[in-house]
Length: 203
Image (cartoon, rainbow, N blue to C red):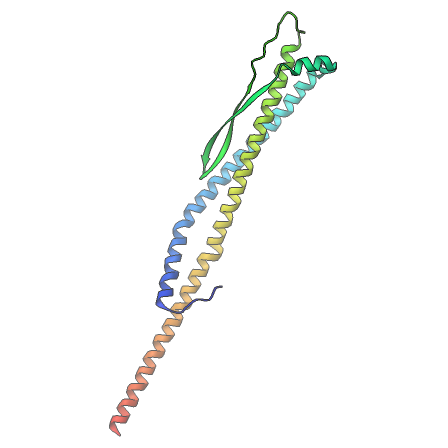
């Protein structure tokens, strides 16, 4: 515990600090609750995405035989070109997190008459897998940001609840006792001095 001065000025400083901590603590506790909920939701979204990615890989595995010929595989993958991964942002509990919108693919067309019958299915499977992977990366970033903020907020709540507020209360208690003792001592000294003065006057 830091050294304190046993003065009325210090007492007021400690009381003001205690008021501030008590005023900010409910806001921090509310933020902590909100972040806990958002972290849970983020974990759920990640679980859904991972499940969808597994399904997409199963679907992709179903069309992989058509990629066995290197020349054919090159033709198929050339039909899928990622242009941009569109994201936006949202503010949650005071922090900005990215939100996945969509993957924008280049508009590549193919001749239905000259391409194999499985081309559409292969392209669709590739696009699904790429979209889900891109979404997963954004969801992982969301989780990391939310979890980091939750950790920081929890530390602040604990600091206020377990350190700062009890410390201020103890400091105020000690200052009150010391000031009370000093006041009692001053009164006693005053009485002694008065008695001495009266005794001197009588003698």
